[in-house]
Image (cartoon, chains in turn purple, yellow):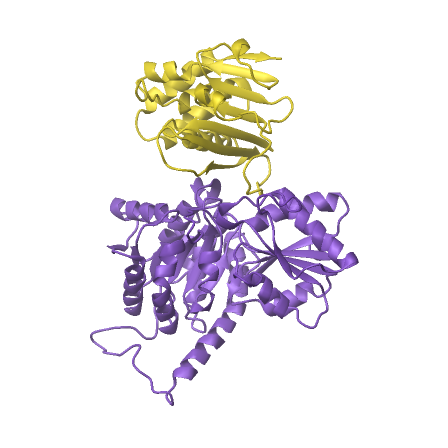
Length: 394
Length: 184
């Protein structure tokens, strides 16, 4: 059934059709309408789940961890400072191998205070052991939540996942979205039934102390292996999703007109959607440009990137986040991945605090990437779209 | 692709107007997106919202800089905001005002006016100091733009507006009949 939905309502429907049993959340702009909609579903009796109200995001994640430990499917949603407050519990969720799925609506971290979009909040949680799936439209938000449960709960993965959408650009934008039939989702996503769970009839301990000689390192190594397993499972799940629902997003990586391109731009999130429009415009003008969209930042699809980007003459990487004193996180990962290939790679940092990433700006970046292969690389990375900077005016 | 920009004040319903227009076009089989420029959530503050309508999927996720049409829900914004900024040549501006289109000094090829505030009040929508004019202005927009049918606007109101549905539909119908337009 097609309906006009915001990204946030698409997320709420994603949790509903995934038959989540426990939702625990604390409101924060611009996430709030996700859990409001879920609360409405539950109040109407359309959603057979327990809604736990808590006093903070830290407690929201703690509740999800406890509930998931009893072997039920859980969901929460947050943004920005709320995600930052969860930080400690994020490590716990992944360390305890709990396949929780969380919607994160990308919002800047203050100060200066901002409710608008950039990816600083999720990028800052890179090393918490959560999978991170970045989306570019509302349909993808809904579909990715269903897929995320299937991926996270896979026996060789068993790790939590964030499904990430840009604040306002997706969260409060209405688009036509197809809500899959419940029967089809039930076939695609079986009930969650983990091997180990808290059960009073079969007592078990979780998360106990391990001495340095004990299997602490081995636990973490298994987590690392599982994250790598997820690369294959994410790609396979995308193929299976396409068979069932007719829609595909490329799994870990999506490419656009990259096959016969010489110059590539790597993007993540909704800016990639606008980027495709720019590729079409520049292709019409004769530029051999293409786009690579990273959907899965963790696990990082390094083999696919090397495969897709090795024949490029030059590569640009756009980061909607920053590391003070160095280039963006996506830029660092892409350049590491391409080490030894001798391809010029430049990072571009922009779109912070919700600053619009316009077609004009993306085109300027593409032109810089094209020029770089001829004239050489001027800088490792730079900030684009700063007020007063004529070179990179929006 | 057709791009529409709405200018209003907090409480007038500009964001909902952009959503109802998108929904009406969606009913007619179009691809659409609608979104607010999310500013301070405060009654009376200037608000901007956007609607895109196309026959193919819409990938652009930026704000609208070169609208085909501009809809102004509050005439006092004309002194405050450059509502025709970036308007395409031959573009349309529709304004909620008591004035006739001839009296509006604005840089646009097509100017339309409707007294949406009075129409809204006639149907008990909002208060004298803050009439809710979004459904009236959409009725007028359907007439002067021809982008969507009045029936689709009415259906979008019926299926998506909570409360005062008959009044909102009647308001859209009246504005459809009363809107005036000139082409310069």
